[in-house]
Length: 390
Image (tube, rainbow, N blue to C red; front, top):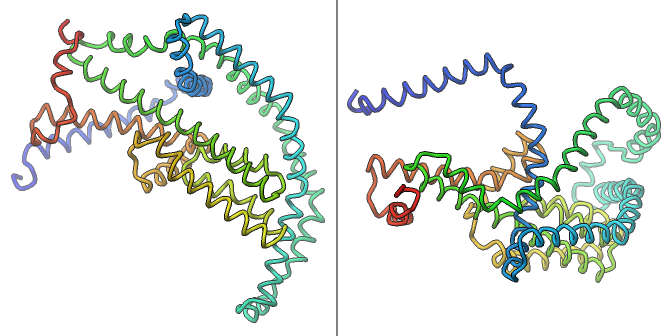
C-alpha cells in the first residue's frame, strides 16, 4: 500500500477504529456517568453567568487596582455599584418597560391582523398577481375569525395541559433561581482569585507541557475577554442608537424596541433580523411613510455600527469568517437551543485556539512543514519559560 501511505495509513485507520470502540463501550455504560451529567448540568448555568460577569468586571477591578485600591475593597466597590445599578433599573426603568411590553403583547395581534389584511387587499386588487391570487380563493377574514374566536377555548385547554406539569415547572424554576443566587458567590471568588487560576492549572501539569498549555490559556482568555466585552459594548450602543432613532421618527414602543435590539444584537447577523421584525410590522401598519423612516434609521444604525463601532471595539480579535459564524450559529442553535446561539461563537473561538495550537505542536514534533509556517509560534519564549527551566 505505498501509494496509500503505507504504515501511516494503517496507523491512522487503527486509531480511528480504537476511538470508535472506545465511544461504543462508553455509550453502553453511559448510566455510570449520570451523576456527572447531572452535576455539570446543574453548575453550568451559574458558572457561565459568573464567567461573563467576570470578564465584564475584570477591567474595572484592574483600574481600581491601578488607583492603589486593594483588590478586596475593589470587589466590594464593584458589588455595591452593581447593586445600586440594579436597584435603579428596577425602580426607574423596569416599570416603564413592563408597561410598554404589556401593551405591545396586547396590541400585537391587532397589528398582525391589520398587516395581513392589507397584504391580502394588495394582492387581490392592486398587484400584477391579482388574478392568480383570486383564483386561490384565500379568505383571510375567515381565517382570523376562526382563529381568534376559539382563542379562549385554546388557552383553556393549554392551561389544563400545563397544570399537570406545574410541579416540574416549579422544580425547574427553583433550580434556575438557586443557580442564579449562587452567581454572586462564584463571581466573588473569580474576581478574587481568577488571575491565579491559570497558573494553578499549569503547575498541575508536567514541566514539558507547561509552556504550551500556558500559551493556550492566555490565547483563550484573550479571545473570550475580547468577545464578551466587545459584544456587550456593541449591543449597548446599538440599543441606544435604535431607541434614539425611533424616538426621533415617532415610532411607538421606541424604548422597548431599542432594548429588544440591544439583546438580540448579541447574536451576530441573525439578531438584527429578529430585532427589526416587530418594528417593521408596527411601522408598516402605522403608515408606509413610517416604514420608510424605519428603514432609514435602521440603515444608519447598521452603517455606524459596521463602519465605526464594531471595528473599533471588536477589532479583528476573533478572525472568524462571516459564513463560518452563520454555520456555527445554526449548528450550535440546533444542538443547544438559545444557549447554543449565544455561546456558540465564543465556544468556537476557544476551540479554534486549542486546535490551532495542537496543530502547531504537531508540526513541530513531526517537522512536516517549512519553518516559515511557524513564524507566529515563538520558540524563544517557549524555551525561556521559567516553568520549563524547572
